[in-house]
Length: 253
Ligand SMILES: Nc1ncnc2c1ncn2[C@@H]1O[C@H](COP(=O)(O)OP(=O)(O)OP(=O)(O)O)[C@@H](O)[C@H]1O
Image 1 (cartoon, helix red, strand yellow):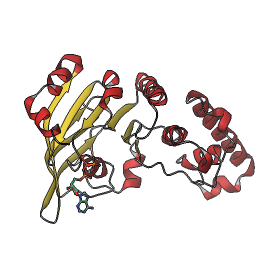
Image 2 (spheres, rainbow, N blue to C red):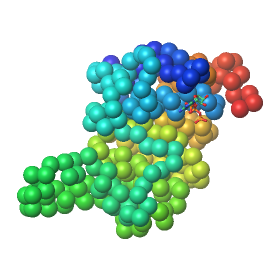
Image 3 (cartoon, rainbow, N blue to C red):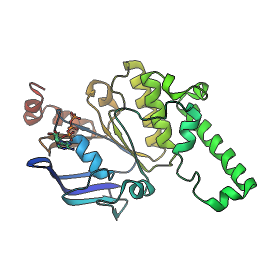
Image 4 (cartoon, rainbow, N blue to C red):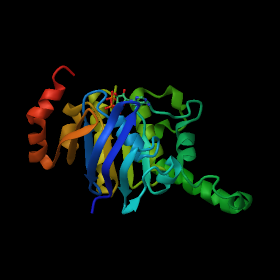
């Protein structure tokens, strides 16, 4: 059973069909890539799945539950987290603080906050968890650096760290390596592969196919709001990339 499934998802902006009957299936613990020329509907698709934009019609099923058009915070509670093309850390806060505020339970209960000892223990556990994640991403040495002082690549890693604080089942990423130098881009994908091995599912929109191709399990190609090709595994993915329909949409892109 796929962990994420969309059925005939459609969304128009005025007269423009940004999504036209998009149906996809994503298996658990896999890395799926969506590509397509500018304006093909990729961002709209992930915005609808993560609840930022309502669909006009169609369904989104996650982990067996219908989550269509639920608000982002509810979708987040199901275990879906998304990262943005432009990372959005709080620039005046440190790397560690940015992780701490990303965790979903913080400040959850006023009663817990009033119980000082319990609160302190929760804080300690949270800091421990944040450091584990920073170590995993190899940015623990930057823990007290203000987020605004990080390089573009480090900010992308921080964005992944913030996502991991929420114990996600599915991470949806919008261009996780845009503007990142190749060395660090490969490093980021090596981290993502390890997350996949730990059972996290990854859905990624990214233009830099040359870098990401060797890491992906499943590929979707979108054009003008529709899925025009799809393939799982090395052989099928190669076929997709040589599909005349796919080659045609990339001419002049
Ligand atoms: N809020 C909006 N209002 C009106 N039109 C929109 C809106 N968001 C997207 N569109 C239009 O919907 C179409 C799909 O856009 P979308 O951003 O989803 O494409 P994309 O594949 O993510 O493109 P890119 O690779 O450039 O990010 C485009 O024609 C875009 O102009």
